[in-house]
Amino acid sequence: MKRITILSYISILIVSLTLSCSNKDVEQGDLSKGELSLKFSLASEVKSTDVEDIIKCVPAAIYISIKDSDSKFIINTKKIALIKIGDEYITEHIELTEGIYTIEDFIVVDDTDSVLYLTPKVNSEFQDLVENPLPVTFEIFADNITNLVLEVIPANIGNPVQFGYATFSFTIVNTLEKGLVVHFPFDGDISEESENNYPFTADGVSLTYDRFEKPDKAAYFDGSGVSINLNNDQPVILSITFTISAWVKMNSPEGGIDYPGYVIFQQRDDNATYDNSSSLILFWSESKEGLVRFTIRSSINENAERGIVDSPSPGYEKWHHYAAVLDNEKMMKLYLDGLLMSDTLFTQTGDFITSIDHVDIGIHTYSGDQLNGALNGSMDDFRIYNRALTPQEIYSLYKSD
Image (tube, rainbow, N blue to C red; front, side, top):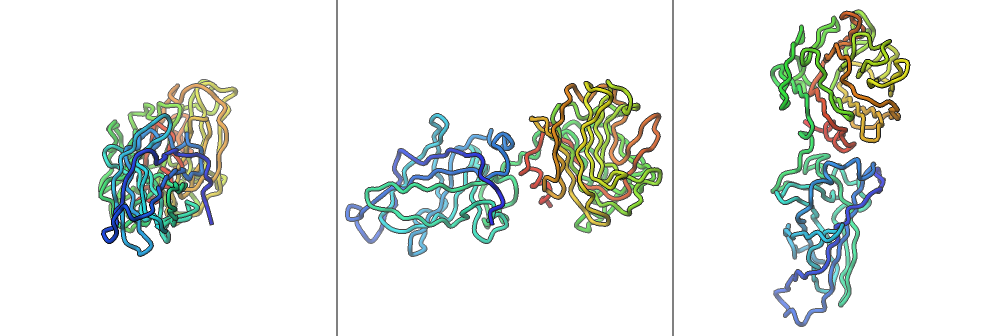
């Protein structure tokens, strides 16, 4: 059953020149020939603007494999250059003798041979993301052009095996490094590994087992108010769009010892509940109401009003991936385990850096460091981006090792 709706199109039209495939047993002049012309559509849950980062990468070539009716490769992972004309990309007509064929591989790459898009194969994890996974059968008729439309999906949502490809001889574009402004991978130590290299203080946080049961690969917060203080309480989210994500395993229903709630991140004013000019960003893996909650308020608001989006908590003693996004269309989005759970329109204007007193991972404080929430559990791969990740990128984070 198809799980993704086709809402936008990549117009990559194979036209104009000629690529010949010979038959060693028959002279070419004795064969009736036709041509193959291909157009490809992007299968996506969202509009093309939401896959903006990958679309900005310019397609330069395709790799394609084609078998004949005897299951013999007549084209085997051949690279064919693309030429951009207007809004379309063109390459050779593929000239074939009359007969039935199958497309076995289809991959779109940029000028560094990094994979941008591809069509998944039958029996792969991503086969249901397109209407017709590979192989796709087509027929060539003499003196005619056979037109096909194939769906492709962004390569950065998974690894080659998930698409059904045994291996790639080129790399997949990794957009997950773009805009990464805070990163705590907790990989054997507690360190901030983004290019910003923000100063931090890890107060009482220790290392523990991650979701793969590997020791010293995640951070442990005991619910007493231990935390990671970031950038000397100066804001780290400076943009009007952003993403916060982390893996979290909550221990027990009690939450922090002074407040029944689990906090992933805060960037807020000391008196953010009452001051109209103060900014607030607060992300809970579970609030006191038992909800995953994402709360923000910009520096321009009325009566200290906030934007809130929430979803039921997934429970305790299991790892879950949490992500909170404010996108270019001012939609607040809440993701759990790679899936969009809830969203709402954020109506305020202004910034998120006015009057900031607390920037922390693992606690919620206010009014002179009074504890109002604390994570009781484990955390791994904490990230902040200065842009809105796409649904595909969120899913990729969830599926990453």
